[in-house]
Length: 319
Image (cartoon, rainbow, N blue to C red; front, side):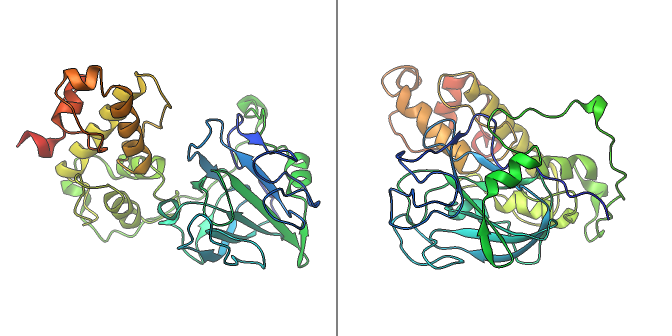
């Protein structure tokens, strides 16, 4: 039997919330200032307060349950009694049952019961659904039907996220992986890029893993693009999809050169990218954005916003 692999669930600059903080602390004691009773798990706050930072799978396994459609303030049970908010539970390769809670609805669109997940892969993003008063991640773990302390498990397996650094590659023996074969249900001969490149783009943008089929990855990316720059989800990485991807990548890179929260440069025009547009519009409403002709804070990176950034507008806006 191969060794179980663990990975930090959040970034190395996330904050582990202590007793008396805005949210509950780690551990399993009665230290939750939001509600009475024990807090069975760990809470992590993002490095940038309020930012919906990415969450990775702490251990590989198979998704067993998903709870969606919860909103902030909802006290409805989720997975377990008195546990609230959007949630995902998975059976870990270590024989334990793990769960994440409070994620936003949009960050769970690619999760499905029965889906195989791998340690270190993107799982979802931090949110504040359920009995929560701010963006954070709750991570819980059960063994033998009882809650156990996730902190001890993560620390024992070199996956405690705070201050974590990747192991020296020279000291790591790479695992021998079998190639994953994707069903050829689409003709890739007319694609704008190779199948490998399209897969890498979609995976980096958070729309699946190496084990996902090519059509699933491509359609996931296409479906994830927000209006007014939506794409036809035809599983075809043609010129329209690729030109859109290149423009979003240029948009993200240009925005990251300005003050404010930096975002991933992954070519995904999703909620995080739109939120960054809104942030820059607000910051420059009486300055550069106004000088370029902008007057509305609408999250739409149209020609005026692109003029402020010094980039070409979206291909749809050039017609």
